[in-house]
Image 1: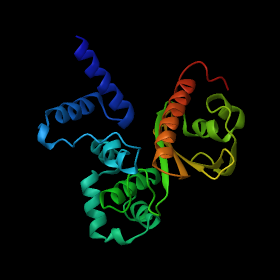
Image 2 (image 1 turned 120 degrees about the vertical axis):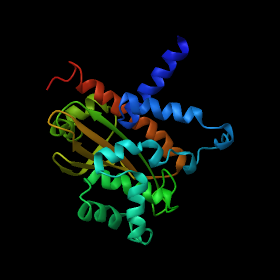
Image 3 (image 1 turned 60 degrees about the vertical axis):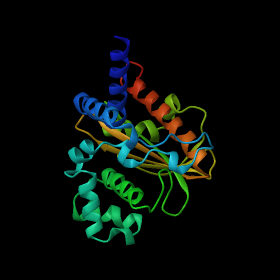
Image 4 (image 1 turned 180 degrees about the vertical axis):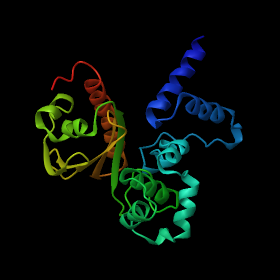
Length: 241
């Protein structure tokens, strides 16, 4: 009974992380457990965190979810970009190509671009194309996109789930984009919000200009925790406007 309960907890944790259904998340975990021991990667040595230790985009976001949101899975998108010789393009050009030529929504165009760059060795997980580092986290929250935007753009609302942090706003375009300098700089955050129906929205936080892989890992954990707090606040009676 304890083993079954533990497995169900792992399934639910994957669902929360990837947005998959219970059945899909369960299947992925079962398939992973069934892999022969000889094909599993050797555990890393206990060294300082590195960029390579970060989770790749294709592992963080399930193929089923990419397909549901964009019409193609990871390998199919990679084939499309390879055919266009996208390894020779900048990050911006790849994302723009996906958005304009294939009508991929903005956040998902960025997601696919990062996954493609990682898969083709153009950047390591947690690393930017230019060699710098960044951290990201995302959550789906059961509130309209504008309400989620206000959680970042409104100082009073922001203090309820992101206290004791100096945020200097650079640009704020409701209800989609919020950019700000973080804690006096030099790092900064870029927040993207996409509506998922009328009463649900997904937020993605990208923390840029980090000093290295260790800071990226710390901030990734930090943002996961803070977005979880935001979700709890907005989805309970604690969210009094």
